[in-house]
Every structure is written in structure tokens, then in C-alpha cells.
Length: 511
Image: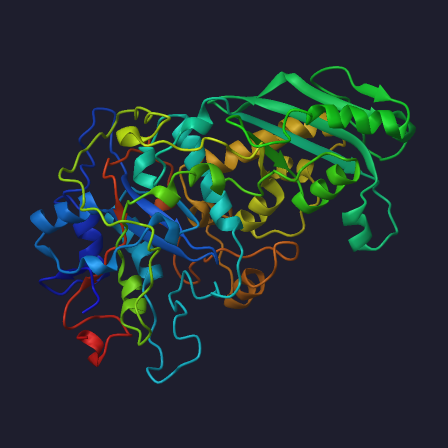
């Protein structure tokens, strides 16, 4: 049998939710804190095609085995952090909230004779994410949530496969945005390739609180364009630098990036709006972006290629794959196997100490990072809110309550961009639950979800899997400060018995 964990009694979703988040759970002591109830922290894994998976650490799995009569029967189902595009925290404040999530991840019944897309996840949450459609922006959203919590000491980084934190030592988080001519009759491809820029804005954030440092804010305007673009607003954080002539204007922009051309121990997270257009413009004016990274994965996974931390299957969702006729998932042969941590530790309510930059047990890393890691706030907003009608930073800022009314000034918008990113990633809720909360629990039809999920990143945005017939998730309720368990290895668990409630189970119970 391919299952990693087998229940000695029949486990349906309700039993599983109660085992993990109920009053007798060894993983969760909801009132063991003088400051109030504490959420159950689990691990959200997102694949590179967008599907989401609930994970727990191997330490937690062993704790369940000892205290809740759940037997570990097969370590072959271990997964590596490299199996996921992102790992990030997800919090549950009640059994009901976890139950709703588990139910959404349960595979639906399928034709046992069907061979087409045999490995396709049929669950309500993941059926819209096709294995062949690579789109990493959902994972990019969660990368930000994890980085914010690492910088603020709110999670144990090692629990999420992050052992090397040397990138945090000299990290800069900045924003770079620009406005283009509002009237441009050229074809869309030409507008993307050669944007006609009116002004640019740049701002750096204070860390770890991720607030704009307005003393660093810049607004640079090509004076020839001063009369172009309606609804202009004055620069709120300093004096606009007006430059006459295209060459001088472009040189002023190049100076912003003169020290971020090669890999080094220092890195910058650069927030932009419309990554494709931004990169095209910077390359057009001879800014060297050849060493830049297009996401944050290279920071968070800088040690994962060397990591031996194992993950095993979690929710019955995984059984859908385990029970398929396809051969077992292959693993990176470079990854040695390691037994789970001997002890389960609970540090609820504490801030986590940073691991040594050199890594655990004297491990060493190259500590050379991309000079710039790009984050496209436009795409993150699309993945969160499913709204392709937003046309600018100011539009998003207004919807998020950062400003009261729109107005054009790239210098101001650089500050807004930092605030927008923080508003998304500092939120306790993960991408799907946060999107539902912001939308007020509105439902999306399967047609809407499929249309967006299968769209490329430059076209219509993907729709997150929102339940079509349920009320607002209790997990959407703002809650207490998140906490973490210091299990050093995460795993996806499968709770099985001989008589499963899940539609894929048939005579394949034995191998």
C-alpha cells in the first residue's frame, strides 16, 4: 500500500479535522496562551501549476501516531521541499475552518477506466489547475507571506525548508514604477516592448516592518512630458527631479541600478507593476538585468537543493495520486534520506531565533544571490482578487484603501506599491482564504475559474478556487498572532483505511 499513514479506524474529513485541530490534538493547544486563543499552524504547499496542498511536519506526524492511534506504515511516500514551488504558513482557528479546507481538497469520484489526465487532481480546490499549465504567481504570493514572517520572527524558517538566512543580512526591499502616455495608438505588443515613459518613481522600505521610507523616495520627470498625462498629483514626499532630455532622463534611472548588476551576498527585492513592460523598458535604456531573478524562490530555496528535509503526504487528496495506476513519484537522487526529528517542540507565543547564516551543523552555502529579485504586484493582485479591470498602481491602492482617489505621480505610486505588497503578505490569511475574505465570500463559477486558471500570466488572471456553495470560511475571521511548531521536516500525510469515503478508492488498496 502506498499510504504513508494509516488510520486504525475510519477517518472521514470531520475525524481528521478533529484529530488535527480539536481539543485533544497533540499539535494544537488553542488556549495555552495568556493572550488568547492560538491558531493551528499548518504548512501550505503550492505546486508550480498552482494546486495547493496541506502539509504537517514529520515531528507532528509522529506525535499524532503516538497520541491519536494513527500508525506510520510507509516512509516511501516522503516528499522533498523541492516538490513544491512554495511552502508557507496557513492558520486555522477552529475545527470547522480546517474541515472546510480539507473538504475542498478531497478528490471527487472519477471514472476508474478513464486514462486521460490520470494524475489530474479532481478536488474542488485544485481541479482548475492543469498539470501542463505552469503559472507560478500563486506561489509567488505565498513567497512574500513567508518572507515577511521570517523577517519579523513569526515562524520557524527551517519548518518551511529555509535553512540559509544569509540573504536577510543586507536585504533591501524597493519599488520602481512608471507612468506611460495615456493615449498610445500603437499595438499592444509594441506598447509592452517600447513603453513611452512619462515619469518614474523609486522608494525603499524600512525593515522589518516593511513601511515606505519616504526619505528615499524619488520622483523623476522628463520635463518634455510635463504637460502630458491628465489628473496629475504633486509628489508628496519630496521635490520632483525634472530633467530635460531623454539621455539625461535615462541616465538618472540607470544610476538607481548601478550597484545591482552581479550576484553577491547582497540582494534587493524589487517591486514593480507589470514585470514584462518594466524589464523591457530597463533593457531598452541599457540597465543590465541579465543576473536578475524573476521571483523570490532563489532566496527561499537557496539551501533546498542541499536539504535532506523530507515531506510526506498529508490529506486524503494525496491518496488520489497514490491510488492511481501510475508509478510512484520519483525523487531527486541527490537528496539523502534522514529520519524524523526525535522530539516535537512547541514554541507557541514565542518569536523564533534566526538560524545561523552559515546554516545548521556548520553547513556552508555559496551565499551569492541575484542582485535583484522581481515581484510583480500586478500579477499578485490578479491572483488574489481575480480582477483584470485594474489598470494602475493607483487603482489597486484605492481599492485597498491606501488612497482616497486616483491621480498620476510615479513618485507617490512607488510608496503605494510597497504598501500594497505589505497589505497582501502581512495578512494572516493565505491566498485563497484572503481572496474570499476580501471579496466578501463571493463565489466564482467553474467557468470563470477555468478561464482564468488556464490563462497565461500576461493575459486574464487566474481565479482562485473559491467554494461555489458554501458560506464564508471561518478561517477568514481575523485572529490572534500566528504561531509555529518547530518540527524540522514537513510531510504530506495520507490517512487511510480499508473502507475509504473517497471516490477513488477501489480494489487498489493493496499493491
